[in-house]
Image (cartoon, rainbow over all chains, first blue to last red; front, side, top):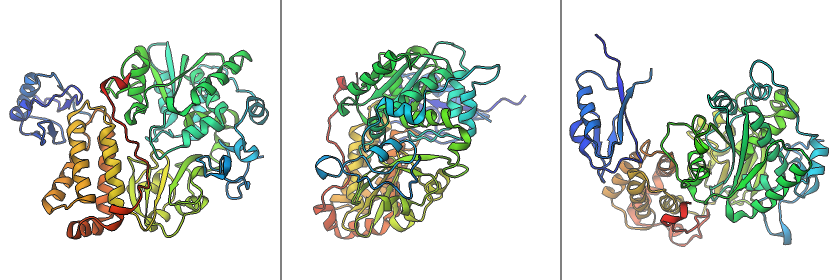
Length: 71
Length: 451
């Protein structure tokens, strides 16, 4: 079964730079000099989805969510 | 009756006491009254020239004015250049039937004067546009937002009262004065403030068309855009398209500033060359560079800028956009790095300090840039600057960091040889001695200043 690709959306106002996300989802996230996420573009698919879901769940600021990737 | 902009009336662009004012001489459509009488348009004169506000009969399909605006191809004049008809349709088609119109006359760009000038000289066109847009989207509430330090609000309230007393406006337009910070004129910030919150940008979605002031679907349009709506409603899409290009139809207001003898606001036709536009304000000496768009804009070498067609496509061909409608001429004896460093410091101070990349990244970028402009920069610092500029892109809730990054990147790219000169020899004489060309008001924003 082919699952739809998703994308990670960061609420930049809610984000307070804890930085857990980059540890849990290094495939698409890195941190800048102040600990705020730098996101590589592109949809998330396959095994990466689990990592992305873990990052979303672990964010102490509830600043991330997964959405269906737009066409 | 309409003056051709290429043969403008010889009204000098000077205010009282012969001092250069920011109210330029030339206007064909929006500023027609000014070029004919030299005075702000009063209501009788406005009605005499343009006739009453037309009324539209609703039929089964789309509101006829929205159709007309779509045919006219009007694009927003607040900076983003979004098609106005699309915005109107989004609000007109919203589920909730109680809707709001917000006219944005904040003009937070320090180098721009077009919206203030329009509100001073042709306020009736803006008020017409507000009630027409409200009718088109089905709004019963309308706000006109202007900066508190302009003194425009009192005059506008009198005009609104005069029109209400004469039965011209079917709804009451409320004149409001939100806090005047750079990011407060962003549409989500205005909507947040009008709804009782702080004048800070908010996370989108939801878009203001879906959930705006008080949770109601809200149309936020720049005041110049609404003034064009007032003209399109009267004269139609074909008339509107008699000026400009097929893709950028109509006329628009620009602020010409910097090394020009007659700085001010001019109404120009899209498709005119940047060279011909700048000639209106009589450039002084050989220009070195032109800042296109304002503080979120793009530095271009003067010769490259001059050859461009002033239109969305023409400016895009050089990686620029009309933005807030500013064209600032940099004279030969100025340092583009010093000018840019001051603007970046200003933009950093104007951040609403909500998103990490803007709160930390923007001041750090401004600091690195100041080091290149005024200090003894090393290669490591310059590379860090280039990396930090990149990291401002797409990382804020609003486009404040993106705009600053665009400005910084264009200065570094366009003036790479000058950057190398600073790297090798330290600040150039102009960076140290030349008077600042572009205004960067010093202001510390405190926590309570957003409400």
